[in-house]
Structure formats: structure tokens, C-alpha cells
Length: 302
Image (cartoon, rainbow, N blue to C red; front, side, top):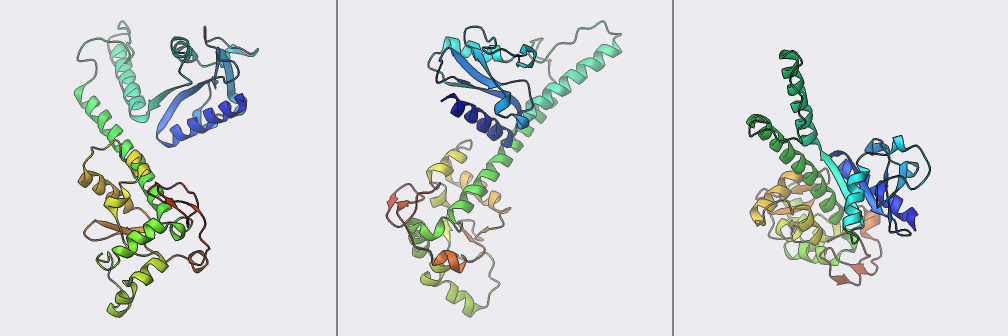
């Protein structure tokens, strides 16, 4: 059973790395021996593999298996203390955000320069020690916070694009009767974002039957941001529909598959569904908004 624990540690470590956390550790309690836990040895997060996972005692954080203790991360003691004090905890994650690592590096460099200027007589304090309100320059804090916001927005935009491209993608849309019905209901009212087609062709494309068949009908963005997965992705933002809609619109400008309407209220595919996909046979499953639909396979929507 502990093989699954090791896999979860590796997968979670890679997910954190993709989301902008450059360093840190994921520790998980053993399923077979609850007085022990697993975490990776001292190795770069991007290189963590099964061979790098070590077992430790919850009681003292020491290695449970024979091996070189020098490879063990010193942070294992933090995780051991958590597991020891909270028997109900199964997983503990400790990370370093890119912006905070930059802050720490900048501060330490500044302290080293001051020490050199003062002839080496001044002790270098780490950022974890408290030495007054002027410990960090205000400009450094502001720059760090700005970096954190920018990194959060970048990661969020990437998740927005991937999730909505899934909803309107070749593998989901042809089978999602809920989305297709919503598109058909609004097919006539939405305004084209890029009206470059001739008026006759545009009028033909705006027919509900044509739009739903090609997958190029418009879908209200307000409907999309109400889906469960989108709510999770947008959770760092305030619960304001305009704010969240604008975040989605801005993110989708980088999508190669999707486009938004001029009024920033709708989204659709840039290209028709392939003929081989539109002719696929629907099967049973669940719709993007989480409701059951007998004509759609179970997917990652909603």
C-alpha cells in the first residue's frame, strides 16, 4: 500500500513545482505503519523519483531504514513534529514560493555587503530572526508582494485556459449535451468577436443547428465561471462576478483554441470541431456542470 503513498508524494511534488513553488517537501504518513512517514531525500524537487523517497520515524524524525543519513533533509524534523502532535494528519507540505526565495536571497546579500563594509564585525542575521521593524526595506516587501501576485495570476491564467479548453475541446464538447443546449439557446444573440466572414456566411453560421454542429456557438462566460472546477481555480479572487469574468477574458487572450466576444461576455472555439469528432456516438456520463447526462462520457468537467 505504501507504493501508492510514494507515487502521491512524487505527483504532488511535481504539481507544486508546476505551480511556481521552486523548493520544499511533501511528507505522507505510512499506510502500513502509522508511526512512520515518507518524504524525499535532499534532492531537487524536479528530480524526485521513487528511489529518492525515504522512510522516517514519527517519534524523532530519524531514518527508519538503513542508509546514509546525510542524504536526509533536515526539514524532516518539522514534518515529524506535525505527525507526532496530530495523529489525524496524513500529509504535510512545506514549500518555498519563488518570490519569498528571492526576498531571502536579496536580504542575505544585503547583510553580507553590510558586514564587509563594517570590517566583518557585524553578525549576519537570517530573515527568520526578528530584529526590528526596519529589518526589510519597504520597497523590498512591496516588490516581493508584487512578484507573488504576478506569479499567482500567471498560474491561475494557465489553469483557466486549460480548463475551458477542456470544456470546449474535441474530447468533451461533442458529448456534453448541457453545454450544447446552452450554446443553442444563445446562438442567435451573441455577437461575433471577429466578424471577418461575409454577411451571408455569418448568417448561416449563426443558425443554432449549424453552430452546435460545428461547436462554434457562443457560451456565456458567467455560466462557465459557475462550474465547480472554475470556482476552485478562481477562488483566490474576490467573489465578484465582474472580477472573475475579467480574469477569464484576460487569460483566454492567450488561448489558441478559444476566442471571446467583443462585449467580453461570451467564449467560443476559434475552429469547428473535426468531422470525425462531431459524428462520434455519445455515451453515458456527467455534464460539465456536474449534472447527470445519459449522452456524455464521464470527464474532468465541472
